Amino acid sequence: MTSMFAASRPRAIQKPDEGRPLVTKNWTSGHSYVVLAALTLTCLVPFSGKPFHVDDPLFVWTAQQIVQHPLDPYGFRVVWYTSSMPASEVVKNPPLASYYMAGIGMSAGWSERSLHVGFLLPALVVVLGTYYLASRCTQNPLLAGAATLLTPGFLVSSTNVMCDTMMLAVWILAIILWVEGLDRAKPLLLAGSALFISLCALTKYFGMALVPLLMAYSVARKRRFGSWAVYLLIPLVLLAAYQYWTRTLYGKGLLADAAGYAHSQNIQPGDSRVAKTVVGFGFVGGCALTGLTYATLLWSRRKIFLGLTVAGLAGVACAEGWIPVAFTGEHWNWVCTQLAFFVFGCISILALPIADWWKQKDDPQSLLLALWVVGTFVFAVFVNWTVNARSVLPLIPAVGILLARRVDPMTLRWRPRQMLKLLVPLAVAGIASLWITWADAQLADTARLAARHIQEKVGNYTSRVSFEGHWGFQYYMQSFGFRPVDFSSYDFEDGNLVVLPGNNDNVNDFPPEFIASRQVFKFDMKAGAATIQSAMGAGFYSDVWGPLPYAFGPVPPENYSVVWLTSPPPANLQP
Image (cartoon, rainbow, N blue to C red; front, side):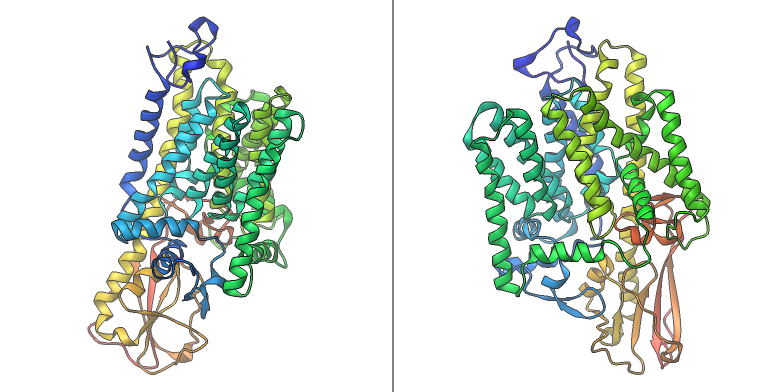
Protein backbone atom coordinates (compact mmCIF):
# COMPACT_ATOMS: atom_id res chain seq x y z
CA MET A 1 0.00 0.00 0.00
CA THR A 2 1.53 3.31 -1.06
CA SER A 3 0.57 6.91 -1.39
CA MET A 4 -0.60 8.56 -4.56
CA PHE A 5 2.32 10.90 -3.92
CA ALA A 6 4.74 8.03 -3.42
CA ALA A 7 6.89 6.14 -5.86
CA SER A 8 6.16 2.51 -6.45
CA ARG A 9 9.08 1.19 -8.45
CA PRO A 10 9.03 -2.61 -8.94
CA ARG A 11 12.61 -3.07 -7.79
CA ALA A 12 12.21 -1.11 -4.56
CA ILE A 13 8.72 -1.63 -3.19
CA GLN A 14 8.51 -0.90 0.53
CA LYS A 15 5.99 -2.04 3.07
CA PRO A 16 3.92 0.46 5.04
CA ASP A 17 5.95 -0.06 8.18
CA GLU A 18 9.10 0.89 6.25
CA GLY A 19 7.95 4.46 6.09
CA ARG A 20 5.76 4.91 3.00
CA PRO A 21 2.58 6.98 3.28
CA LEU A 22 -0.73 5.18 3.07
CA VAL A 23 -3.51 6.54 0.90
CA THR A 24 -4.84 4.04 -1.57
CA LYS A 25 -4.41 0.36 -2.25
CA ASN A 26 -2.23 -1.01 -5.07
CA TRP A 27 -1.20 2.41 -6.40
CA THR A 28 1.64 2.05 -8.91
CA SER A 29 3.90 4.40 -10.83
CA GLY A 30 1.74 3.65 -13.88
CA HIS A 31 -1.21 5.24 -12.14
CA SER A 32 0.91 8.30 -11.34
CA TYR A 33 1.98 8.69 -14.97
CA VAL A 34 -1.65 8.53 -16.10
CA VAL A 35 -2.75 11.07 -13.47
CA LEU A 36 0.04 13.50 -14.37
CA ALA A 37 -0.54 13.16 -18.10
CA ALA A 38 -4.28 13.72 -17.67
CA LEU A 39 -3.70 16.72 -15.41
CA THR A 40 -1.22 18.22 -17.87
CA LEU A 41 -3.61 17.87 -20.79
CA THR A 42 -6.50 19.20 -18.71
CA CYS A 43 -4.52 22.34 -17.92
CA LEU A 44 -3.10 22.96 -21.40
CA VAL A 45 -5.59 21.70 -24.00
CA PRO A 46 -8.10 24.51 -23.25
CA PHE A 47 -5.39 26.96 -24.39
CA SER A 48 -4.57 25.13 -27.63
CA GLY A 49 -6.33 27.83 -29.65
CA LYS A 50 -4.32 30.65 -28.05
CA PRO A 51 -3.19 33.24 -30.62
CA PHE A 52 0.50 33.56 -31.34
CA HIS A 53 2.03 35.78 -28.69
CA VAL A 54 5.22 37.75 -27.98
CA ASP A 55 8.10 35.99 -29.82
CA ASP A 56 5.97 33.14 -31.21
CA PRO A 57 5.94 34.68 -34.72
CA LEU A 58 9.74 34.58 -34.98
CA PHE A 59 9.68 30.84 -34.38
CA VAL A 60 6.78 30.35 -36.82
CA TRP A 61 8.46 32.36 -39.57
CA THR A 62 11.73 30.51 -39.01
CA ALA A 63 9.88 27.19 -39.29
CA GLN A 64 8.24 28.29 -42.53
CA GLN A 65 11.65 29.36 -43.84
CA ILE A 66 13.03 25.92 -42.93
CA VAL A 67 10.31 24.22 -44.99
CA GLN A 68 11.50 26.16 -48.03
CA HIS A 69 15.24 26.21 -47.23
CA PRO A 70 16.08 23.50 -44.68
CA LEU A 71 19.76 24.47 -44.33
CA ASP A 72 19.18 28.22 -44.13
CA PRO A 73 16.84 28.74 -41.15
CA TYR A 74 17.46 32.49 -40.78
CA GLY A 75 17.73 33.42 -44.45
CA PHE A 76 14.88 35.93 -44.42
CA ARG A 77 14.37 39.54 -43.40
CA VAL A 78 12.00 40.87 -40.77
CA VAL A 79 10.98 44.22 -39.31
CA TRP A 80 11.13 43.39 -35.61
CA TYR A 81 12.55 46.62 -34.24
CA THR A 82 12.31 49.78 -36.34
CA SER A 83 13.68 48.68 -39.71
CA SER A 84 14.09 45.60 -41.88
CA MET A 85 16.93 43.35 -40.71
CA PRO A 86 18.22 39.86 -41.50
CA ALA A 87 16.57 37.35 -39.17
CA SER A 88 20.04 36.18 -38.14
CA GLU A 89 20.52 39.56 -36.42
CA VAL A 90 17.13 39.46 -34.70
CA VAL A 91 16.69 35.87 -33.51
CA LYS A 92 18.85 35.08 -30.48
CA ASN A 93 17.85 31.44 -30.08
CA PRO A 94 19.07 28.37 -32.03
CA PRO A 95 16.68 26.83 -34.56
CA LEU A 96 15.87 23.33 -33.28
CA ALA A 97 12.43 24.28 -31.92
CA SER A 98 11.60 25.75 -35.32
CA TYR A 99 12.76 22.54 -37.05
CA TYR A 100 10.36 20.66 -34.78
CA MET A 101 7.63 23.16 -35.63
CA ALA A 102 8.35 22.80 -39.34
CA GLY A 103 7.56 19.10 -39.07
CA ILE A 104 4.27 19.90 -37.36
CA GLY A 105 3.41 22.56 -39.91
CA MET A 106 4.07 20.30 -42.88
CA SER A 107 2.02 17.45 -41.45
CA ALA A 108 -0.81 19.20 -39.60
CA GLY A 109 -0.85 22.76 -40.92
CA TRP A 110 0.17 26.11 -39.53
CA SER A 111 -2.89 26.96 -37.48
CA GLU A 112 -2.49 27.98 -33.86
CA ARG A 113 -4.25 24.84 -32.67
CA SER A 114 -2.08 22.50 -34.75
CA LEU A 115 1.15 23.99 -33.44
CA HIS A 116 -0.03 24.21 -29.83
CA VAL A 117 -1.16 20.57 -29.89
CA GLY A 118 2.26 19.61 -31.26
CA PHE A 119 3.93 21.44 -28.38
CA LEU A 120 1.91 19.47 -25.82
CA LEU A 121 4.46 16.67 -26.22
CA PRO A 122 7.38 18.63 -24.69
CA ALA A 123 5.13 19.71 -21.82
CA LEU A 124 4.20 16.09 -21.11
CA VAL A 125 7.86 15.07 -21.23
CA VAL A 126 8.75 17.72 -18.65
CA VAL A 127 6.07 16.67 -16.17
CA LEU A 128 6.49 12.90 -16.59
CA GLY A 129 10.28 13.20 -16.73
CA THR A 130 10.23 15.15 -13.48
CA TYR A 131 8.23 12.35 -11.90
CA TYR A 132 10.78 9.79 -13.11
CA LEU A 133 13.72 11.75 -11.74
CA ALA A 134 11.90 12.39 -8.47
CA SER A 135 11.17 8.69 -8.03
CA ARG A 136 14.91 8.15 -7.58
CA CYS A 137 15.23 10.45 -4.62
CA THR A 138 11.89 11.08 -2.90
CA GLN A 139 8.93 9.14 -1.59
CA ASN A 140 6.60 11.69 -3.19
CA PRO A 141 7.42 11.92 -6.91
CA LEU A 142 3.80 12.57 -7.85
CA LEU A 143 3.91 15.71 -5.75
CA ALA A 144 7.12 16.74 -7.52
CA GLY A 145 5.49 16.32 -10.94
CA ALA A 146 2.34 18.18 -9.94
CA ALA A 147 4.34 20.97 -8.29
CA THR A 148 6.23 21.41 -11.55
CA LEU A 149 3.08 21.54 -13.65
CA LEU A 150 1.02 23.86 -11.44
CA THR A 151 3.25 26.91 -11.59
CA PRO A 152 2.79 30.11 -13.60
CA GLY A 153 6.24 29.81 -15.14
CA PHE A 154 5.53 26.38 -16.60
CA LEU A 155 1.88 26.75 -17.61
CA VAL A 156 2.24 30.11 -19.34
CA SER A 157 5.43 29.04 -21.14
CA SER A 158 3.75 25.83 -22.28
CA THR A 159 0.89 27.73 -23.92
CA ASN A 160 3.36 29.41 -26.29
CA VAL A 161 5.21 27.91 -29.25
CA MET A 162 8.63 29.24 -28.34
CA CYS A 163 11.63 27.11 -27.48
CA ASP A 164 11.50 27.20 -23.68
CA THR A 165 9.37 24.20 -22.72
CA MET A 166 10.92 22.12 -25.48
CA MET A 167 14.41 22.95 -24.20
CA LEU A 168 13.40 21.89 -20.68
CA ALA A 169 11.96 18.62 -21.99
CA VAL A 170 15.24 17.74 -23.73
CA TRP A 171 17.16 18.91 -20.63
CA ILE A 172 15.31 16.44 -18.42
CA LEU A 173 15.73 13.58 -20.91
CA ALA A 174 19.47 14.28 -21.01
CA ILE A 175 19.72 14.12 -17.21
CA ILE A 176 17.69 10.90 -17.05
CA LEU A 177 19.90 9.18 -19.62
CA TRP A 178 23.06 10.40 -17.92
CA VAL A 179 22.21 9.30 -14.39
CA GLU A 180 20.95 5.94 -15.66
CA GLY A 181 24.06 5.56 -17.78
CA LEU A 182 26.32 6.15 -14.80
CA ASP A 183 24.32 3.83 -12.55
CA ARG A 184 24.24 0.99 -15.06
CA ALA A 185 27.66 1.67 -16.61
CA LYS A 186 26.01 1.76 -20.05
CA PRO A 187 28.06 3.72 -22.62
CA LEU A 188 25.10 3.77 -25.00
CA LEU A 189 23.01 5.70 -22.47
CA LEU A 190 25.86 8.15 -21.88
CA ALA A 191 26.21 8.68 -25.62
CA GLY A 192 22.46 9.21 -25.88
CA SER A 193 22.63 11.77 -23.10
CA ALA A 194 25.47 13.58 -24.88
CA LEU A 195 23.30 13.76 -27.99
CA PHE A 196 20.38 15.15 -25.97
CA ILE A 197 22.65 17.73 -24.34
CA SER A 198 23.61 18.87 -27.82
CA LEU A 199 19.96 19.00 -28.89
CA CYS A 200 19.11 20.91 -25.73
CA ALA A 201 21.74 23.56 -26.47
CA LEU A 202 20.52 23.78 -30.07
CA THR A 203 17.00 24.39 -28.78
CA LYS A 204 18.12 27.14 -26.40
CA TYR A 205 21.71 28.05 -25.66
CA PHE A 206 21.21 27.70 -21.91
CA GLY A 207 21.23 23.93 -22.55
CA MET A 208 25.04 24.17 -22.55
CA ALA A 209 24.83 24.47 -18.77
CA LEU A 210 24.17 20.72 -18.67
CA VAL A 211 27.84 20.05 -19.38
CA PRO A 212 29.24 21.53 -16.14
CA LEU A 213 26.15 20.42 -14.21
CA LEU A 214 26.52 16.76 -15.15
CA MET A 215 30.29 16.96 -14.83
CA ALA A 216 29.95 18.06 -11.19
CA TYR A 217 27.32 15.41 -10.49
CA SER A 218 29.45 12.67 -12.04
CA VAL A 219 32.56 13.60 -10.07
CA ALA A 220 30.51 13.56 -6.87
CA ARG A 221 28.92 10.25 -7.87
CA LYS A 222 32.09 8.43 -8.97
CA ARG A 223 34.61 10.29 -6.78
CA ARG A 224 36.95 10.57 -9.77
CA PHE A 225 37.14 11.33 -13.45
CA GLY A 226 36.54 8.43 -15.78
CA SER A 227 35.84 7.52 -19.36
CA TRP A 228 32.38 9.02 -18.92
CA ALA A 229 33.93 12.51 -19.18
CA VAL A 230 34.71 11.93 -22.85
CA TYR A 231 31.01 11.90 -23.67
CA LEU A 232 30.64 15.45 -22.36
CA LEU A 233 33.01 16.61 -25.09
CA ILE A 234 30.49 15.60 -27.77
CA PRO A 235 28.15 18.56 -27.15
CA LEU A 236 31.11 20.95 -27.20
CA VAL A 237 32.23 19.61 -30.57
CA LEU A 238 28.73 19.84 -32.03
CA LEU A 239 28.25 23.40 -30.73
CA ALA A 240 31.59 24.39 -32.25
CA ALA A 241 30.35 22.94 -35.54
CA TYR A 242 27.13 24.96 -35.20
CA GLN A 243 29.17 28.11 -34.56
CA TYR A 244 31.22 27.45 -37.71
CA TRP A 245 28.12 26.61 -39.80
CA THR A 246 26.26 29.78 -38.84
CA ARG A 247 29.37 31.88 -39.35
CA THR A 248 29.64 30.49 -42.86
CA LEU A 249 25.97 31.22 -43.55
CA TYR A 250 25.53 34.60 -41.89
CA GLY A 251 29.00 36.07 -41.49
CA LYS A 252 29.02 35.57 -37.72
CA GLY A 253 28.63 32.62 -35.38
CA LEU A 254 25.20 32.86 -33.79
CA LEU A 255 26.27 31.20 -30.54
CA ALA A 256 28.91 33.84 -29.86
CA ASP A 257 26.56 36.55 -31.13
CA ALA A 258 23.86 35.59 -28.61
CA ALA A 259 26.40 35.56 -25.79
CA GLY A 260 27.67 38.98 -26.81
CA TYR A 261 24.13 40.36 -26.96
CA ALA A 262 23.30 39.05 -23.48
CA HIS A 263 26.48 40.59 -22.08
CA SER A 264 25.96 43.97 -23.76
CA GLN A 265 22.34 44.24 -22.62
CA ASN A 266 22.75 42.82 -19.11
CA ILE A 267 23.23 46.10 -17.24
CA GLN A 268 22.43 49.38 -18.94
CA PRO A 269 23.70 52.79 -17.79
CA GLY A 270 21.75 53.85 -14.73
CA ASP A 271 20.67 50.31 -13.84
CA SER A 272 21.15 49.09 -10.29
CA ARG A 273 22.57 45.66 -9.46
CA VAL A 274 20.65 45.66 -6.20
CA ALA A 275 17.40 46.48 -7.98
CA LYS A 276 17.99 43.76 -10.55
CA THR A 277 18.65 41.26 -7.78
CA VAL A 278 15.40 42.15 -6.01
CA VAL A 279 13.49 41.90 -9.30
CA GLY A 280 15.17 38.56 -9.97
CA PHE A 281 14.02 37.28 -6.58
CA GLY A 282 10.51 38.44 -7.43
CA PHE A 283 10.47 36.64 -10.75
CA VAL A 284 11.76 33.38 -9.32
CA GLY A 285 9.31 33.45 -6.42
CA GLY A 286 6.39 34.32 -8.67
CA CYS A 287 7.14 31.84 -11.44
CA ALA A 288 7.84 28.90 -9.12
CA LEU A 289 4.86 29.76 -6.94
CA THR A 290 4.88 26.53 -4.92
CA GLY A 291 7.87 27.84 -2.97
CA LEU A 292 5.50 30.44 -1.54
CA THR A 293 2.36 28.36 -1.11
CA TYR A 294 4.21 25.51 0.64
CA ALA A 295 6.31 27.76 2.89
CA THR A 296 4.39 26.95 6.09
CA LEU A 297 5.03 23.23 5.51
CA LEU A 298 8.66 23.64 4.56
CA TRP A 299 9.96 25.90 7.31
CA SER A 300 9.62 26.63 11.00
CA ARG A 301 7.78 29.71 12.24
CA ARG A 302 11.08 31.34 13.12
CA LYS A 303 12.47 30.87 9.62
CA ILE A 304 9.23 32.06 8.04
CA PHE A 305 9.31 35.19 10.20
CA LEU A 306 12.92 35.84 9.22
CA GLY A 307 12.16 35.34 5.52
CA LEU A 308 9.09 37.58 5.66
CA THR A 309 11.10 40.24 7.44
CA VAL A 310 13.79 40.28 4.75
CA ALA A 311 11.19 40.24 1.97
CA GLY A 312 9.17 42.97 3.67
CA LEU A 313 12.23 45.18 4.02
CA ALA A 314 12.96 44.70 0.34
CA GLY A 315 9.39 45.70 -0.50
CA VAL A 316 9.57 48.80 1.73
CA ALA A 317 12.94 49.78 0.24
CA CYS A 318 11.44 49.61 -3.25
CA ALA A 319 8.31 51.50 -2.19
CA GLU A 320 10.36 54.29 -0.66
CA GLY A 321 12.68 54.52 -3.64
CA TRP A 322 15.78 53.37 -1.76
CA ILE A 323 16.05 50.55 -4.28
CA PRO A 324 15.40 52.18 -7.68
CA VAL A 325 13.01 49.73 -9.33
CA ALA A 326 11.48 51.18 -12.49
CA PHE A 327 7.70 51.61 -12.52
CA THR A 328 5.39 54.07 -14.29
CA GLY A 329 1.96 53.14 -12.88
CA GLU A 330 -0.11 54.55 -10.04
CA HIS A 331 -0.46 51.73 -7.49
CA TRP A 332 3.17 51.48 -6.47
CA ASN A 333 2.52 50.27 -2.92
CA TRP A 334 0.39 47.37 -4.21
CA VAL A 335 3.13 46.43 -6.68
CA CYS A 336 5.71 46.44 -3.90
CA THR A 337 3.45 44.33 -1.68
CA GLN A 338 3.17 41.68 -4.38
CA LEU A 339 6.92 41.93 -4.99
CA ALA A 340 7.61 41.34 -1.29
CA PHE A 341 5.55 38.12 -1.29
CA PHE A 342 7.32 36.89 -4.41
CA VAL A 343 10.70 37.72 -2.87
CA PHE A 344 9.73 35.64 0.15
CA GLY A 345 8.79 32.81 -2.22
CA CYS A 346 12.25 33.00 -3.78
CA ILE A 347 13.92 32.95 -0.37
CA SER A 348 11.97 29.77 0.36
CA ILE A 349 13.03 28.30 -2.99
CA LEU A 350 16.74 29.07 -2.58
CA ALA A 351 16.68 27.70 0.95
CA LEU A 352 15.46 24.33 -0.35
CA PRO A 353 18.68 23.23 -2.12
CA ILE A 354 20.83 24.70 0.62
CA ALA A 355 18.97 22.81 3.36
CA ASP A 356 18.84 19.63 1.28
CA TRP A 357 22.56 19.68 0.52
CA TRP A 358 23.47 20.57 4.11
CA LYS A 359 21.47 17.59 5.35
CA GLN A 360 22.82 15.15 2.74
CA LYS A 361 26.25 16.44 1.76
CA ASP A 362 27.37 13.03 0.52
CA ASP A 363 24.34 12.57 -1.76
CA PRO A 364 25.23 13.35 -5.41
CA GLN A 365 21.55 13.82 -6.19
CA SER A 366 21.39 16.60 -3.61
CA LEU A 367 24.36 18.29 -5.27
CA LEU A 368 22.75 17.92 -8.71
CA LEU A 369 19.53 19.57 -7.55
CA ALA A 370 21.35 22.34 -5.70
CA LEU A 371 23.51 23.25 -8.70
CA TRP A 372 20.50 22.98 -11.00
CA VAL A 373 18.52 25.54 -8.98
CA VAL A 374 21.33 27.91 -8.02
CA GLY A 375 22.95 27.83 -11.46
CA THR A 376 19.67 28.66 -13.21
CA PHE A 377 18.99 31.42 -10.70
CA VAL A 378 22.39 33.02 -11.30
CA PHE A 379 21.94 32.88 -15.07
CA ALA A 380 18.38 34.23 -15.03
CA VAL A 381 19.16 37.11 -12.69
CA PHE A 382 22.79 38.07 -13.34
CA VAL A 383 23.79 36.78 -16.78
CA ASN A 384 20.82 36.92 -19.14
CA TRP A 385 20.09 40.16 -20.98
CA THR A 386 16.79 40.59 -19.11
CA VAL A 387 15.06 38.99 -16.15
CA ASN A 388 12.10 37.01 -17.46
CA ALA A 389 10.01 33.96 -16.69
CA ARG A 390 11.40 32.04 -19.66
CA SER A 391 14.87 32.05 -18.07
CA VAL A 392 13.49 31.02 -14.68
CA LEU A 393 11.58 28.06 -16.16
CA PRO A 394 14.46 25.50 -16.07
CA LEU A 395 14.70 25.51 -12.28
CA ILE A 396 11.01 24.72 -11.68
CA PRO A 397 11.29 20.88 -11.94
CA ALA A 398 14.24 20.85 -9.54
CA VAL A 399 12.24 22.97 -7.09
CA GLY A 400 9.37 20.49 -7.35
CA ILE A 401 11.69 17.58 -6.54
CA LEU A 402 13.33 19.42 -3.63
CA LEU A 403 9.92 20.34 -2.26
CA ALA A 404 8.86 16.68 -2.35
CA ARG A 405 12.08 15.64 -0.60
CA ARG A 406 11.49 18.27 2.07
CA VAL A 407 7.99 17.00 2.93
CA ASP A 408 8.99 13.31 2.93
CA PRO A 409 9.17 13.11 6.76
CA MET A 410 5.63 14.36 7.24
CA THR A 411 4.25 11.64 4.94
CA LEU A 412 5.72 8.73 6.87
CA ARG A 413 2.25 7.96 8.13
CA TRP A 414 -0.85 9.11 6.34
CA ARG A 415 -3.50 11.12 8.11
CA PRO A 416 -6.29 13.11 6.43
CA ARG A 417 -4.95 16.33 7.91
CA GLN A 418 -1.48 15.70 6.47
CA MET A 419 -2.95 14.99 3.06
CA LEU A 420 -4.95 18.22 3.24
CA LYS A 421 -1.79 20.09 4.12
CA LEU A 422 -0.16 18.71 0.98
CA LEU A 423 -3.07 19.34 -1.37
CA VAL A 424 -4.25 22.81 -0.33
CA PRO A 425 -0.97 24.62 -1.20
CA LEU A 426 -0.85 22.72 -4.49
CA ALA A 427 -4.44 23.71 -5.29
CA VAL A 428 -3.74 27.36 -4.45
CA ALA A 429 -0.69 27.39 -6.70
CA GLY A 430 -2.65 25.64 -9.45
CA ILE A 431 -5.59 28.03 -9.32
CA ALA A 432 -3.31 31.07 -9.38
CA SER A 433 -1.25 29.57 -12.23
CA LEU A 434 -4.31 28.85 -14.37
CA TRP A 435 -5.59 32.35 -13.63
CA ILE A 436 -2.33 33.87 -14.88
CA THR A 437 -2.31 31.57 -17.91
CA TRP A 438 -5.83 32.67 -18.79
CA ALA A 439 -4.84 36.33 -18.39
CA ASP A 440 -1.91 35.83 -20.75
CA ALA A 441 -4.15 34.10 -23.29
CA GLN A 442 -6.67 36.95 -23.09
CA LEU A 443 -3.89 39.45 -23.76
CA ALA A 444 -2.77 37.43 -26.78
CA ASP A 445 -6.35 37.32 -28.02
CA THR A 446 -6.70 41.10 -27.97
CA ALA A 447 -3.89 41.39 -30.53
CA ARG A 448 -5.71 39.05 -32.91
CA LEU A 449 -9.06 40.76 -32.27
CA ALA A 450 -7.50 44.17 -32.86
CA ALA A 451 -6.01 43.08 -36.17
CA ARG A 452 -9.39 41.71 -37.30
CA HIS A 453 -11.18 44.85 -36.15
CA ILE A 454 -8.77 47.09 -38.01
CA GLN A 455 -9.05 44.94 -41.13
CA GLU A 456 -12.83 45.29 -41.02
CA LYS A 457 -12.62 49.06 -40.63
CA VAL A 458 -9.81 49.97 -43.03
CA GLY A 459 -9.48 46.86 -45.17
CA ASN A 460 -10.41 48.87 -48.26
CA TYR A 461 -7.31 50.99 -47.69
CA THR A 462 -4.89 48.10 -47.09
CA SER A 463 -2.24 49.48 -49.44
CA ARG A 464 -2.09 52.68 -47.39
CA VAL A 465 -2.19 51.08 -43.93
CA SER A 466 0.96 50.37 -41.95
CA PHE A 467 1.49 49.51 -38.32
CA GLU A 468 4.03 49.65 -35.56
CA GLY A 469 4.48 47.13 -32.77
CA HIS A 470 5.46 43.52 -33.04
CA TRP A 471 4.80 40.18 -31.31
CA GLY A 472 1.52 38.45 -32.14
CA PHE A 473 -0.03 41.71 -33.29
CA GLN A 474 2.52 41.90 -36.10
CA TYR A 475 1.78 38.32 -37.14
CA TYR A 476 -1.95 38.96 -37.50
CA MET A 477 -1.60 42.37 -39.11
CA GLN A 478 0.71 40.92 -41.74
CA SER A 479 -1.71 38.04 -42.30
CA PHE A 480 -4.25 40.66 -43.43
CA GLY A 481 -1.78 42.26 -45.81
CA PHE A 482 -0.78 45.25 -43.70
CA ARG A 483 2.89 46.14 -43.65
CA PRO A 484 5.07 47.08 -40.65
CA VAL A 485 6.57 50.54 -40.60
CA ASP A 486 10.20 50.45 -41.69
CA PHE A 487 11.58 53.78 -40.50
CA SER A 488 14.60 53.45 -42.77
CA SER A 489 12.39 53.79 -45.84
CA TYR A 490 8.93 54.95 -44.76
CA ASP A 491 7.29 57.72 -46.81
CA PHE A 492 5.13 60.18 -44.89
CA GLU A 493 2.45 60.62 -47.53
CA ASP A 494 -0.91 62.35 -47.17
CA GLY A 495 -3.69 59.93 -46.37
CA ASN A 496 -1.49 57.13 -45.00
CA LEU A 497 -2.84 55.32 -41.94
CA VAL A 498 -0.61 53.93 -39.20
CA VAL A 499 -1.85 51.66 -36.39
CA LEU A 500 -0.12 52.11 -33.04
CA PRO A 501 -0.71 49.50 -30.29
CA GLY A 502 -0.52 50.94 -26.81
CA ASN A 503 0.91 47.88 -25.01
CA ASN A 504 3.59 46.56 -27.32
CA ASP A 505 7.28 46.79 -28.17
CA ASN A 506 9.17 49.32 -30.31
CA VAL A 507 6.25 51.69 -30.82
CA ASN A 508 7.13 55.28 -31.69
CA ASP A 509 4.42 57.89 -32.01
CA PHE A 510 4.56 60.50 -34.76
CA PRO A 511 5.22 64.21 -34.20
CA PRO A 512 1.98 66.23 -34.04
CA GLU A 513 2.74 68.03 -37.27
CA PHE A 514 2.46 64.74 -39.16
CA ILE A 515 -0.91 63.77 -37.63
CA ALA A 516 -4.22 64.86 -39.15
CA SER A 517 -6.38 62.87 -36.70
CA ARG A 518 -6.36 59.89 -34.39
CA GLN A 519 -8.97 57.20 -33.66
CA VAL A 520 -8.52 54.96 -30.58
CA PHE A 521 -9.98 51.45 -30.27
CA LYS A 522 -10.18 49.94 -26.79
CA PHE A 523 -10.46 46.30 -25.76
CA ASP A 524 -11.46 45.68 -22.17
CA MET A 525 -9.38 43.27 -20.11
CA LYS A 526 -11.45 41.38 -17.54
CA ALA A 527 -8.96 38.81 -16.30
CA GLY A 528 -8.09 40.65 -13.08
CA ALA A 529 -4.43 39.86 -13.70
CA ALA A 530 -1.78 40.71 -16.28
CA THR A 531 1.50 39.33 -17.59
CA ILE A 532 2.53 42.33 -19.72
CA GLN A 533 1.31 45.64 -18.41
CA SER A 534 3.70 48.39 -17.36
CA ALA A 535 0.92 50.24 -15.53
CA MET A 536 0.66 47.23 -13.19
CA GLY A 537 4.38 46.44 -13.04
CA ALA A 538 3.90 43.11 -14.85
CA GLY A 539 6.65 41.95 -17.19
CA PHE A 540 6.48 38.17 -17.54
CA TYR A 541 8.53 38.19 -20.74
CA SER A 542 10.93 40.96 -19.70
CA ASP A 543 11.44 43.03 -16.59
CA VAL A 544 11.59 46.06 -18.90
CA TRP A 545 7.81 46.12 -18.41
CA GLY A 546 7.88 45.87 -14.64
CA PRO A 547 9.42 44.27 -11.55
CA LEU A 548 6.78 41.52 -11.32
CA PRO A 549 6.35 38.44 -13.51
CA TYR A 550 2.61 39.06 -13.28
CA ALA A 551 0.31 41.25 -11.24
CA PHE A 552 -3.19 40.99 -9.83
CA GLY A 553 -5.71 43.81 -9.92
CA PRO A 554 -7.86 45.81 -12.37
CA VAL A 555 -6.24 45.69 -15.81
CA PRO A 556 -6.28 48.76 -18.08
CA PRO A 557 -7.87 48.27 -21.50
CA GLU A 558 -5.69 47.48 -24.49
CA ASN A 559 -5.59 50.56 -26.72
CA TYR A 560 -4.93 50.68 -30.46
CA SER A 561 -4.67 54.03 -32.21
CA VAL A 562 -5.25 54.55 -35.93
CA VAL A 563 -3.37 57.69 -36.97
CA TRP A 564 -3.99 59.52 -40.26
CA LEU A 565 -1.08 61.44 -41.59
CA THR A 566 -1.81 65.02 -42.76
CA SER A 567 -5.13 64.05 -44.34
CA PRO A 568 -8.59 63.47 -42.78
CA PRO A 569 -9.76 59.88 -42.18
CA PRO A 570 -12.56 58.11 -44.04
CA ALA A 571 -15.91 59.28 -42.70
CA ASN A 572 -17.28 55.75 -42.19
CA LEU A 573 -14.58 54.65 -39.72
CA GLN A 574 -16.05 54.04 -36.26
CA PRO A 575 -14.54 52.28 -33.22
